[in-house]
Image (tube, rainbow, N blue to C red; front, side):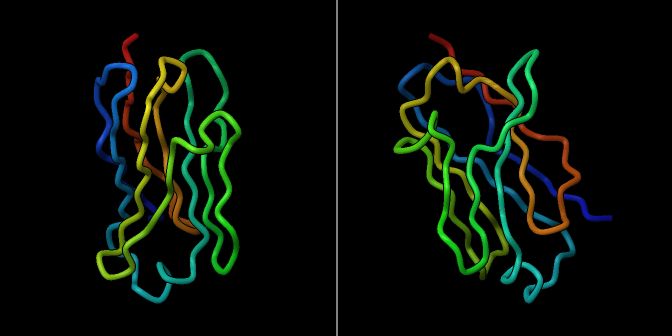
Length: 115
């Protein structure tokens, strides 16, 4: 059903860190290894935006607003994708979503940064 499960969100003070995790239950290893991967977020009252992307065989890219603070990565053995978020700011408050290839139907995880 192309579902993903995002986790790791929470409430954190400005300047703090969180690590988000993305998993796709049932995805087979070869599909995971060959999939383009991305993180998105949707701030309150705003449209969803791309935060970070990690294409297969390509360079990782970040939105200007998070470049230098966020890091996208993956663990092929565990079939997990991550978003390490450091020096969080109030404007990072959003629901964060992930995609692993065509697996992109998730509920998201809420990140709230208090100033």
